[in-house]
Length: 176
Image (cartoon, rainbow, N blue to C red):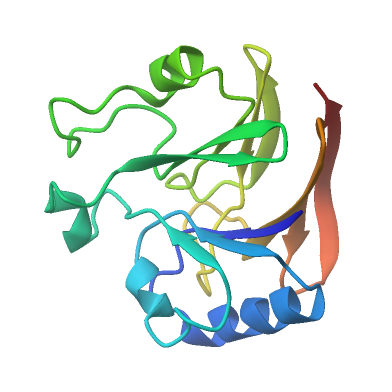
């Protein structure tokens, strides 16, 4: 199964449209938005299978009926979706820290945003992927990026792609 992941779109609809077209061309099976302005997708909700997690500053984050974190099982991989890689001051008291939740639920892959820093790392035997952001300019100096992840059985291949250069900047393969 092929996943297309973005985060932190921050109302940049031009870059969002480009990524959506790339995801269509790549035949993405599941589109994931990891928050901060996930409402940018309001016009695209029904064209593709979509999962959205609110960002810590999204109005939806204040709604106790909308989960801050979600767990998906795709093939043999359990995935935690979260905007922030750790607990945040805007969390509800009952929200578990993402790492605690990952341990409790035997998660294999954590997808997160918030930092605007594209990254693929292995920590505590978990694969952590941050697709970066889709802002025109980011004060941290990183270009707009997105991620594509292929899952097959117990195998994960994660890539982060620079949108402006259409070039992979990180790639990681992991077998569980």
